[in-house]
Amino acid sequence: MQEILVSVIVPTYKRKPSFLNRTVDSLLDQSYKNIEIIIVNDNPPDSDYKSEINNFIEQEYKQFNNIVLIDNPVNLGGSLARNKGIEAANGEYITFLDDDDIYLTEKIEKQLEFMIQENLDLSFADLIIKNEDEKIIDYREFSKLSNFETNNLLRYHLTRHITGTPTFMYKKEKLMEIGGFEKVIMGQEFFLMLRSIEKNLNIGYFAQAHVVAYRHSSESISVGKNKIIGEKYLYDYKKRYFHLFNNNEKKFIKFRHYAVMAVANKRDGKILDSAKNVFKMIITSPQDVMAETFGFITKQKRMVGKLK
Image (tube, rainbow, N blue to C red; front, side):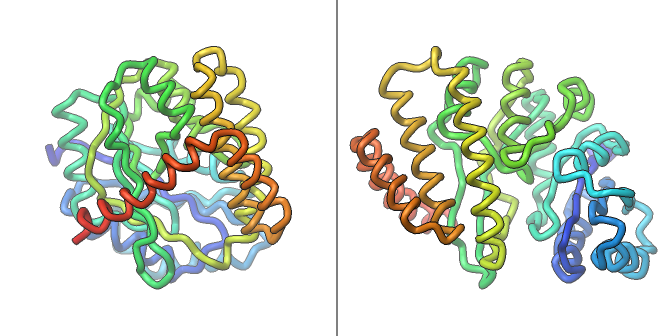
């Protein structure tokens, strides 16, 4: 299996070298060694981050022939920066990693084995989410998803979201066929998975967690503002698919929308708007409020068991 080249695409934007250093080192520490690391510097040309990152990569990693640096002349945004990496990749398989997250040691090896055994075009996996203090604050999993037929995947994705870009692994040829990422403000991974499902890719769930994503308190305000814009667009987009759902399922999609908006408003400092969305959430589907609250408590207990 070691003869198969896997490309890992790492876009970087307004991130200090210390974070990127942790990210790249987690890739160099992989048990699977035949990898190509493509770092896409997407900082604006007049940004201090631009030269800082370029100099850092040149000084710290010049001895590694498997590290490729792409220096975008202008800021393209996350979607198009990743597409630049996809175009440049030589690997038969492609994965992604954000510039402040890490892979655990066996991520590539185990997921590639799964891809080959199941003859998949795309696989997704569980995701560990930590805060700045290395405390686990969430564990994203898809244990309730058992049917991987296209229609079932589509319905599940539109309601629950099969996301976590760093957990995705694609066959490069299939990723190229579907056109890579769309240019959207938020939800890039949502739309990539949506297109993958609608294009009938052979998709599987790798039910293990080998990726750690970090949430930074300093980003909460900007994330809140972008999330509000992106969530409104995403909800309007989902309405195109409402004919697939019954009334209760539509209520759940609306409930989820109001819940996301409530959190985003709170992060943006708009407490009154957050409260209004909490009220809409409860009025829209009180049964889902109860079910999701119970589900969250159960998930927390299960998460503790998984990560012991």
